[in-house]
Image 1 (cartoon, rainbow, N blue to C red):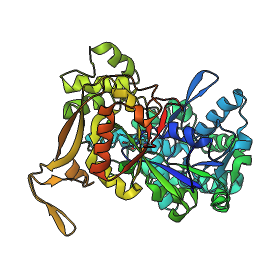
Image 2 (cartoon, helix red, strand yellow):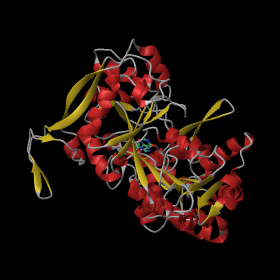
Image 3 (tube, protein in one colour):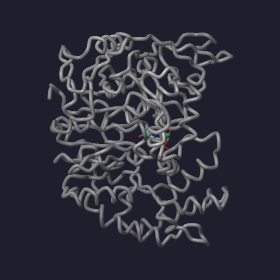
Image 4 (cartoon, rainbow, N blue to C red):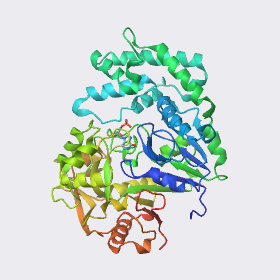
Length: 497
Ligand code: IMP
């Protein structure tokens, strides 16, 4: 693996998440000594195959199958129920995580009330909902900033845990009293909340049941809890560190399409903070971008969505339909060549297996978007990896969005500048109000119409595909250093022209 002069490498999503970071973590894991996952929580998901069986993991770092030190950093919202289940699966497969995994003592602790708050609020928001994954990530971070949250280290001091839990429960119960009690009760009986085990008729939450459950987690996780900030800081410059981002720049709470974002800063800034490091400790940031289509899960602006509002409604309506993959497979003769954009959208989703690994929701599908890549470049830098290139093997026309036209009815003021109706935007203006009114302008390219999965060098890639990559590089001032042409580790091309 060619990574001269690089000791710390960070992989960051350059779009709306799900860019294929998991595969690249696996690809670089051989090179690394430490693999650290530092933001997000069980809202993310990646697929791991063990002894021929496939599992979707949410919290365990993607590098766990490698005999390296895997770290869950301080920026992660850790749900002990989920990680305990994942550890059990790994233990059954003979993988000793006690040796391989360290969990930050200051990672944020997810409690049952966080899941309840997340789900109740989303259900009550109607049309205004964000489309969260329901894993409690938002409420955990809210509690953190309100200074009433718990951290993983609290599992090690049970008396203190109980005091903090009680204070937190009191606040959660007060907030939940504002909502329909039937809805709250129903949510408390969700399978992710042990089918009502934490429900108590009188106080809403059964405090003792929560304490008993979290005491069990202390036994499972206790020996892995450590000051990982110091561990990673001491390793900078001496060991090879791979930082694994979660979600993508456009979902960042600070730099994304607010309010349709997650609650972490998913950019390189959030990633290094969640590792206890400094931006200057990172030698190379690699922005990961899906190509030449992109995806988004949940609500929020998505100018290049293929099929526009019709497609958004289709995915929205099927938000909770876990059988969506099956439904779409049987539904229609959708192909990559379908003239109806909704059918083409469905065909790309099926070809790319774009169904949320955490929720099973259909991911929304759009064409590659240069205005957001230009925006992302400012956050991530110029090194880009393009993933999932093989998905459009059979597509004869590929559309690349080169700029947006702002179609808002009135002038939008932004700082000292303003955007007038009809203006052309080369770089995305990330305000949701603006993005929602943008119409993409496209340039069409001929597809390559052949299988590229077995190609291992840039030179051998079809000229049609290389032309699009070269166009993107020039148009967004980026350097594409890696291309992924299939899900396997070997199906990776390092650019060497
Ligand atoms: P939350 O992170 O569950 O609060 O969800 C907030 C928004 O971020 C929703 O639109 C989710 O669909 C989106 N989101 C959260 N995690 C991921 C991810 O791993 N991939 C893609 N979208 C995500």
